[in-house]
Image (tube, rainbow over all chains, first blue to last red):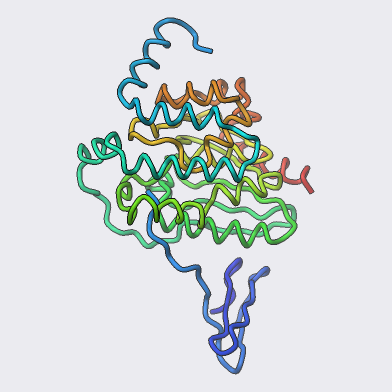
Length: 47
Length: 267
């Protein structure tokens, strides 16, 4: 369910990004597809 | 700045155990230019230099292999209230030791929260606010030069330093290393009366790496910062308040409520 507060969702077609500022039911869609959670690339430890 | 000859002797002995790191720390603190970005760059470069040094290597060699198994559970919880965004560290079983996943989760949560207009309240689940960097990951950096760029590129210290005027932090339990370095950037720091605060980095042959050589001197001056670093132990919440490292001390039961009251005053 694409509605988690504070998460970014991205369209795999046009790369449009939305930020969820209020949680709710349902999914966000773009270009007819459910948008996927966008996450920053994991980086190695700096320690 | 020290209480007596016994403390002076203890600090001298600590400096003798890690003379390179202790000297590097003293030079860093003396170089303070009042510019937080310059300070973070200088600190990170010094930290990475020490990652290639003999004192850190000796500490690493004396350590057992990491004992913990990978734990993919969520590291932070974000709740948006009318008066503030609440970010809670949720790696409770590990005293919120700052591993890669917590770093990345907190960085993303702060980025989103600070993109809005609301104040941000940072609190933690479990017995401690944050016990510092996850020791199980120490020594896992790719190489010191890359580690410098990673530290500067995905920097919780930058988040806190840039937008600290909108952040309220509630401390409790162990607040070590990054667990005090990051909060010290915040506009308001409230400590529960059980908080124990310290900078353990020198015992690892390192200097603070989460902005502590910028944030602590701004609150308590460079002499007390160096004293805390050399001593290696912890100070109590009342002492931290007397020094100005935290702004007030409350009971643990009142900590969260007090943080939200202060956040409302920032609106």
